[in-house]
Length: 269
Length: 309
Image (cartoon, rainbow over all chains, first blue to last red; front, side, top):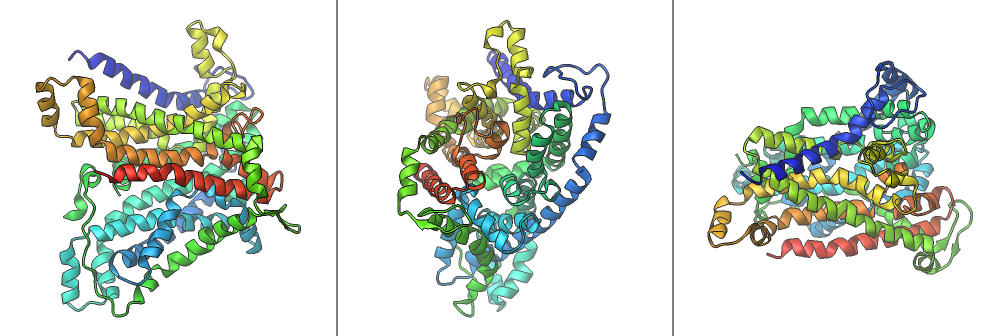
């Protein structure tokens, strides 16, 4: 094929461009502390200890615990609330359901910045500033539009016969939900859970505005603090940033197929 | 089973036909299902949003007494150069966060979809998608280093003899905004490639063969077959990425914090700064309301484009 080579060149260029910033970061992280290396230079004597230094300087253990705690509350809570609401909006007719759905849909396009001033005051009134709840409560709420949209689409996509058979059996909507719908929701959950995990882990704005203590933030939120603290020590900054970036890449590589399917499904909906 | 559909099918799915619903014993019972989500959403999204609208009519520092000023804050949004410019920068970022990734994604998807081996396709897709999972703040730190005086960008320029062009890209008034924009393009291109590849693989090859037999060249086939077939995917990508461009915060905050001067200041960072540094809550809220309206005004026509068929 004649057009193979320019096409291959384009792909190769894109691949290099994609990994270059990460490679530059990794090479820099291995340079001696306090040096001012060039962007791409092989370290003569790789300083693997830099990662340990960055781990300690950033209190990475605490940070991992904090992010995990936030994820462990936000993701299950969002799944639960969205499953209930998605089912109600899809399959239990009630007056006003269109309006409720429209209110949730509107949130899909809402820039989070539009809420930070009132949220700051509101979270302050609740006495929750600088705690993990300051991230958990608004973030779970902000995930509702997408999650409900997702679960509603899932329930609407189930074959009508399933619902009919439940109805013939005289099941109430609650029974139909528990015995027919819930067991079938697992695939929709797994894809949604992957996306919500990533969006929580990477959440930056809420963490920076509502939580001062970096060890109570999300992983991405802590990056904001590092830059201020270690901005002059480029080696440590690169090492610390890599420690934060690598878990998301690892999760992506492990769940890669689920991820790709989740994104495509999400776009399809 | 219905749930086992592949990605391509999911994207191709036609809008679900209306299902008959399980009959509820009482018409009100549906409310119970949505109530928990609605309470949380109302309390932490709708209520604060209403407060933002309310604050926008006051001159308020966030703690002292507030003074009603009517539309004065909105007048400032359209007259104060700093605020108006931030909105202009957000629109410029659409070119980098949205248009460029869609163009690159179309080209790359065509190459990836053409790969003969399925494993090669999956690997290429995954590699190009990688930036999408990196926290935006992490991407901004990596690129700040790329753009710095000793960074890779300048290193490469010097390597090919373009020393004259080398500069600290994020510290230069003329290059900072496009440089920040390219960080967004780096992040978003993988998403476009992924979406468009799935779309391309769905197109019946017979369509292209028939068109080729009729004498249609590559460009004609691209505009007559490929683009229309990918319309849904392009609209989805354009919507997601336009919102990301107009509401950008993480990348700009970490890479430049709006500087040098105000040359990369975007509404998101300016709202943050007005609230927490300048204690101008009313003005920040007016800017926030304008930002919300701008997002809606830009994506609404896109949705119409996606629906008509």
